[in-house]
Image 1: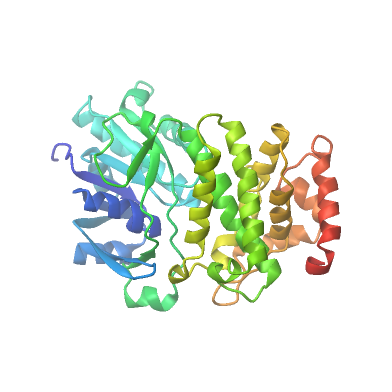
Image 2: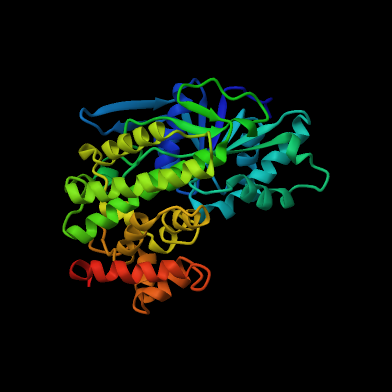
Length: 403
């Protein structure tokens, strides 16, 4: 087995973010990119071509050819461990449901790396949209290694804020080229500077931050909140509009979405004093609203709003922001309006199908709004009783629109 190679990254997940964002940044930064995935057709084609295209969707369409790439099958445990052991850095972009499957492979690679060189740390970029991702990885990865493995010295768990938008691709686009991926021009990866055990790679597009928790929350409570709010307001306004650029072309929807985002910005400034200014967050919001209306991206209301069990959950973009507002005694009625619209969201995919989890959500919906607030959003009807009262008021105001 070769020694550690300073220009190699192993990426768990050859999906949209893995290929269009992480793989693109590191390949263009001079790294060899090794994708590890369970989907064999993609891995097979990566090894055949050793390149793929990222199609940038904007006013003008650009195609970036990403080179110096290859793949390994995720179930080839020995090879995966060897790739990890000899890499400069690892990234993970498999989605929340796939994380449990990768920890044994990561642990095997870390142990093999330790056997090869007991002084070689490994940084793991966690390219997942989740809060406290470093704690989650530590809790799941540490028990798989020997008790005397120097985990904190040798493993850097690097949280990120993934702001790049990658739409659902139509079946015809995937069939025309299984490796191509569509994405917006935005190409900045915000990550936790303090978490690195090695030097931060000198790559264009990486933006290390000192207070990473604040930037993770900025993504959740500004970007994710605004995106979902636009989808939910837009669906109520006109369920026949399929695209985000269509719903946000309606002035009332745009204005409500922006107002909810600005209300959330006030919460962020209160939570992280000195980290963000009103000018910075307002500029960020207005830039996002331009990006959300990118017609060429073709982002759908379905993609942005679906998965209600998660997106309306207690710590997620809307309910989480409302709980923070209550904690800081700040207004939240515009965010609450978006949450209630989310309860009524029933957009479908190109085949006319609901997201599978949204079928389960609709069963909860049939039990009433109070049930949703308690069981899905986890509001306490005694401690947070004002939320229940304000929802009843909002329902009366919106009765003509949403029943």
